[in-house]
Length: 626
Ligand code: ADP
Ligand code: MG
Image 1 (cartoon, rainbow, N blue to C red):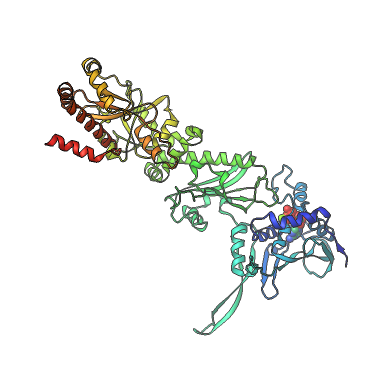
Image 2 (cartoon, rainbow, N blue to C red):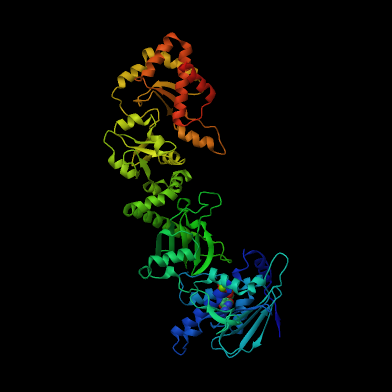
């Protein structure tokens, strides 16, 4: 028996790979099962084209058998097998892939199906085994051979007895070491779980002898051990099936089996694309928010399969952040994988798939919005915030995609409306899309600032989410209609009594407003006669981009940079209180000071802003009472 050396560079590669390429040892089983499946593919393909060969369908299976006592894990297939030369060439040199050259010869000339291109999958066996033995008999060959290796040292090869065509791989599982247990790779339940996880959709049955204990027939307290052969994998992936064959329950079961969520999916999206890039996908929009959704811990991503084999649990690149709530999987044969199948080397295909998926999700949401408004609103309650966040983030890069999916509560309709619905109802003289911000719809309803706009008969959108104003600032306009806060300095409405208000601003009142402005120096930028107030005496408005609601949000942020709104105190010149104010300004400056401070504090309260000195405020009120 001759001892062969691995090629020098292989030796180093082998060591490197064993120690670093794969992040999880358990994937060795995925690799060996994939190889077995490839080998059956080859014999199957041969049988299709060579009439002299006939094969029994039943022999196309893979068997996994652990032998705890001897620490041997055996993986058997009745595939095409390997000749002596093939054993040497395929298993003796790293980075030469047999499956690639086979596929090149036969079907995939256009570069599809390049899984295993690099041919190192087999060596992952050394992550869990001290010694790997391969006994193989090639189709059409008289002799079988045994290849054996204890790792980087090299391998031996010798003739061996084997009846049937195919390959048997025997792994001598490593002894446990302190930081790593290898026993698990001999446990039925563990092997079963690994097969389910990675190889559930291998198209040939993967069989295991599963043992158990059961009551003896006709007896209640007498038990017997038994062993029964089970098929572990489900074989036909639901995403490869025809949509017409599948019921909503099938999708629901899949959602639950895959543990995508504990709820029922609100909507499923089944995609079969056969274009420039080929892929199948099943996506779900969940019904309920995952408990950790709006936290740092939440990880977005879809399961990624290559040709039915799980490659990645959560491929984040497949989902944009604004659709991070989507669950599901993608399977494509067109992916370029690196040697470990873990990181994708060229992500051109992946990018195409991601783009495509994003479009599908959008159009599904749009049709939900159009055809099943109730369910869309249900969805929006959970994930609307994420959509608005999507409008805001990346400097508005996705605003076009998302703007038609937004909903806001409408002052007129008393329900959620789209921007399109709002704009299509706008009277001709209305220049802006008006909005008001506050804690709740009820509070916004009572804001004095809304009076004038509402009286004009203009619809107001209520913003109750932190993110709303920021998103809208990023949006800037919807179909060339700009957004305008009802608190903004200039409302863009021609007031009927404009003249009288302008007068109130000038002339005799100018002095009063200047006086008040001095008293409130540092607190407000200006004091003006209001054009938006009707019944209320006072309110705060803002000049500039930052509104009071935005200031609140910014102040609450961990990296608070003390950004302030440019506040303007607006006084209603038609309110009785204004007369008292004027009166005091003429005759009693102390009173004028008191009134100014009271009015300012009232405006703060209406806005839900904290009073700087609540005690002084109550004292001030008492002063007027006595
Ligand atoms: P790849 O699968 O990417 O080709 P591997 O390292 O997994 O790379 O396998 C190397 C080669 O060894 C395969 O291409 C195949 O030719 C051969 N091989 C491995 N396992 C088997 C098997 N069970 N039956 C037949 N050939 C096999
Ligand atoms: Mg392989």
